[in-house]
Length: 116
Image 1: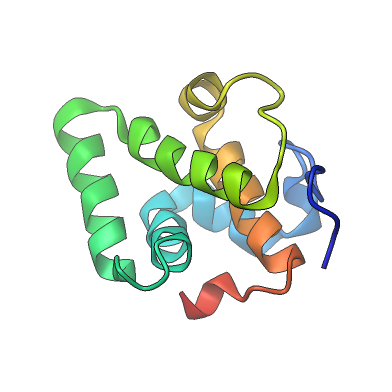
Image 2 (image 1 turned 180 degrees about the horizontal axis):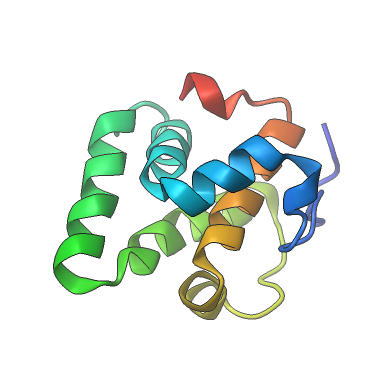
């Protein structure tokens, strides 16, 4: 696995994994649900994580705040820097790219997020 402390892909590295990029763009709840399942060590099901993201997004338009929680968990778990800016800004301004980057990070660390 890659060393802690460095992201393995950039925020705009969507060309490195086009399927996850398209999924993050068209149906981000799926990737957020998978990340929630993995980062919560099975305590949150994929469906529950996806549903919470959808509900928060639908009623408040701020699903980015929910996905931001998992970006922060991922960063803390692997000692990753808060870049290109803090987690809230990254998720609120570049939500699809942020979700796709976090998903790629799990994959690049030999965790199969698709199994989430």
